[in-house]
Image 1: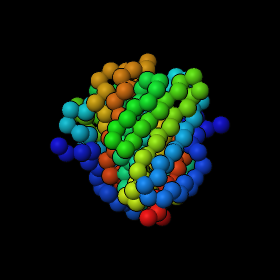
Image 2 (image 1 turned 90 degrees about the vertical axis):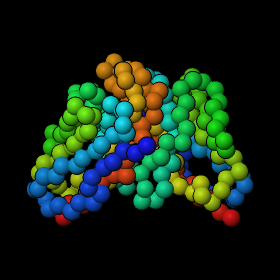
Image 3 (image 1 turned 45 degrees about the vertical axis):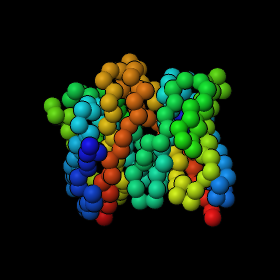
Length: 117
Length: 114
């Protein structure tokens, strides 16, 4: 059974550019969340999607956006990149099928390492 | 105050010993708790989940939850060098329209020395 697949694995971008990261969840998982991990802030929640709808959003500026497609695949976009956006971006999927069904753990992908120069 | 706080590390234990990792949380709406293990340069891997007060055992791992004290712990028995990693505690506040935003602690680095 394939895990959560994130592409690309590594990215180097210049300040001011934009970037799109992709995530394919485990087959059958419809809930997808994104997290940013940095040495200073740890793992921070970006947003979560279910059935193509954003259900929750973390405290990140509007430059961070995402979407989910009908096949549950998800993308996140960061516009006008800043040096501080350099981080490991992690996507996670869950079998949760309804709100409140938080008893399902999230499985993480390998992440996309973004470096902004 | 951070929503999820883990005991400060790093934690070093000898091989074969019990490693005890602790976590407290401030959001009483958190219903489910998870322990993730993250090796250096890798992504977090789910090792235990717990939703009810009490203990839950899985092999060498035991998770404990006390909702009244807002406390979660993870015990690793017969620690092995391969257990050396960062352990992340996370709480989920699924409910309403949320499917389970995870709030993570800062992590505890565990080193098991031979």
